[in-house]
Length: 159
Image 1 (cartoon, helix red, strand yellow):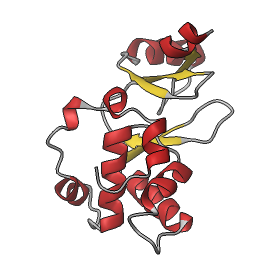
Image 2: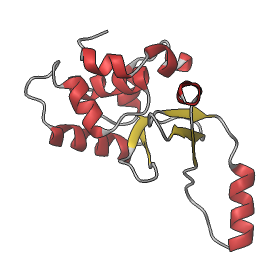
Image 3: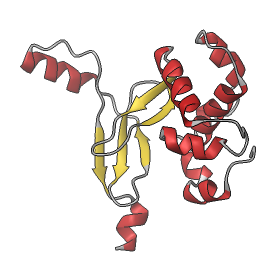
Image 4: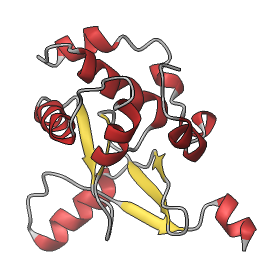
């Protein structure tokens, strides 16, 4: 893969983070579909999120700074915010942790291991939950962010 840091690669197992729906993903075309200029940095951010899934801004910076020597943390923040505004990436707000980002896809929930802090997608239909919450509260829910926390198999088996 394109110059990713060995420390970063050891932390994330590509097989576990791989998204088969993105196998033929054309980052430049998709960025343009979202009214975004396809800069090398944005393309690299898209590739990293596609390959590794849920990453914080700091993790993206650590991952990409070896490829782009003049890259700053501010550049990553600026690009992530623009990509979020244009609905190319989504922010996943984790309890008591910094947010992580992922490529925007169909509505889903997340699983977070409280030991290793890794995050996985959980394709769970939230429509019924949102409908019940709206009915019980008379609140017009516009966004839902459901994160289940517990122990992943690896951490559970290590105990």
